Every structure is written in structure tokens, then in C-alpha cells.
Length: 205
Length: 205
Image (cartoon, rainbow over all chains, first blue to last red; front, side, top):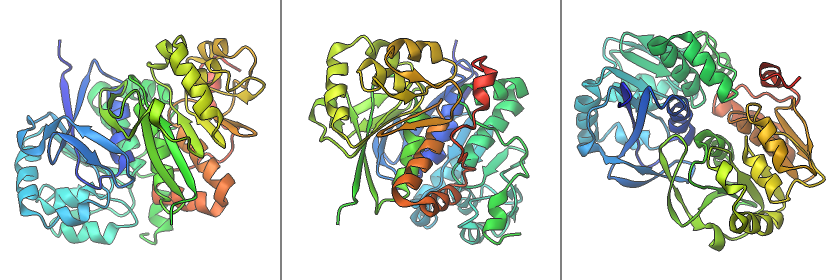
């Protein structure tokens, strides 16, 4: 039997490694519940901002619409917010998923595609002003580990994606499932979405 | 100018995603200090325990000897501890590196290759007995986020690799460098190597 939730991460040149593989570690630990795949500019190698390369299972254009979308940040986001072809594809493809998530500056991509219009959202604390510029119709929350607003889940920078992924597991499957995964991967889960010491460190509160 | 430290992660079929990409996020954030690459069974795709594939830059046999070796865990370790060709290669290749590190059950691979003989070490807390069996000449430390003994650094399960990587950055470049990276990736660094709530949760203390 196929797992009930199909999750696809969006890769692009210059994606942030941990934004993708932190959450995929969490969801991949529950392989009876989640199937995980990755969509890139083409099916094949995609180079991260840190150098290591991952292999996309699908090209963006050919990727089946999943139940859950994960959009990472990374320096590659800076060009993509001005790429109408990418944003058109993201708006249609991610917009038809049941749950849309982002990590770090990935929320800037969602915002630029119009996918956060009318939503509350957060982003990386070092590039918060940049994210804000991408979404004038979004209510940006400066102090939050992650923000859930209906079917949109946006997290703060990099490592925050792991905490958000565990919260989403808790939301879908119950808190015990999230705690079990956190213990298995020896993660101290920040279960409170308001926990965010990095907002103050970056002068946002 | 090339970065002073060349770090290579060892990939194999069934490697644990976050064991590799947590530390590579940390080292990759300091690209003026660390170059990062990955060595697999062949140069090309390697499938993780969670499903997503990464691209090895080198085949194990052809990988240049780096300054720092990173050996992850994951279910693929279980077969490799009985693979004499792999263990012979690992012993020679990693043994000539200045610093040898492992995450999670990767310490079982180091132990099986004889690379932890006479050293103190730790491992994942759920598979601690298995790791211990691989290294009868190793002093296993059941409660530790990570253990440094001279040029060997071994961490506890999965997420612990990030804390160990930050500690290694601190060791090589100073504490400020580690704190800067932790803040940048919005990680709450567990700076105390004795912090380990997962030992008690798994009945090891």
C-alpha cells in the first residue's frame, strides 16, 4: 500500500542543504506514512549552495502534484523571485497541493508566486527584510520558529525546518508520532512555535 | 586560494540523510575554510536510507585523501561491517586523514575497520549495543552528545552530528566561528559534549 502522504521538495541551483534534508529526514523516518521525492530544474543533479549535489527525481514541469510541497531557501532564491516561468509553475503546481511548506527564504519564493497573499508567514531572520519585500500582501511574523496559517506552513531559518516538520507530523499523525521521530533522530524538538531567540539576535524584536 | 581544510563524507547505499547533510551544512557555511565533497561506491547517485539520492563526487577507491573524514550512519552500515573490501579501503583512506569523524552508527564502521582501537567513542543510543560489538578494543561512552579523543570525533545519533560539527569548527577556528555559524543556520548549539538526554531515554544510564 502506498503511503498516504506524498511529499515533494523543490530543488534549484543554490538551494540550502539542511532546509531540504532536515525535513526529509523527519518525513523519511515515517516511510509508511510519507513518500518523499525531489523536483529540480531537470531530473538529475542539482548543486546546493554548500556545494554537494542532490539528484532530482523529476523536472519541475513534469513533477506530479503532491499532497505536501516543501520549498527550501538558499542563495538560489534571490534570482528565482524574478523568474516568471519558475513562479508561474510554482503557483500552479504548489497551489494545488493540500499543504504548502517552506523553510528559511523559501517563504520569499512562495510570496513572490502569490502563494502567501492573505496569509501569516515567517522566514529566515537574517534576510527578513528581503522576504517581506516579496510579499506585500502577507502578514509577516518576525518572532516565530514557524507559522501555520491554514494550509500554509512557513519556518524560520535552516534548522527551524526540522522543528516545523515535526510539528506537521504532530498535526497529521498526533504528537506521539512526532516525539517518536524526534527521539529516534536525537533531536531536541522546539515544540513551541513562538520559541525564536534568533529574532532578537537580529534586531527584529 | 584553496580552503585550508578538505572534508570528504563517505556515502554508501542506505546512508542516513541528516548524518551527512547536517554537518555539511555547517562546514559548507564556511566555504573559505572548508571544501566539502562526497565519496560513494561509484562516482554518481547514492540512495539514502530515507530514499532521496545524493551524487558522489568520487568513487571510494579514487577519492583523494582529505584532511577531515566524515562517516555517517544509517541502515547501510549493517552490511558494511562484514564487507572486508570496504573496511580495508576505509582503514587505509580514513586512517591517513588528520581528523576522522563519524555520526550515529558510523562509529560502528570506524570500529569495524579498527580505526577506534584504543580510543574513547560514542554512537547512536538506539543501536549502542551493535556499535559496541564492532569495537571490542574501544572504550564506549554511553552518555555523550559527542566524544573527542585526540584525532577521532564520534557523535551520538543523527542530529548530534550538527553539534559535533560546530564543536570541531570551534576547535579548529575558535568559538566565535562556531557561534556565528550556529546563529546563521538558526541552530541552538548544544555546546556541552556531556548533554545527552537520549542515553537515559534508551536505558543506557
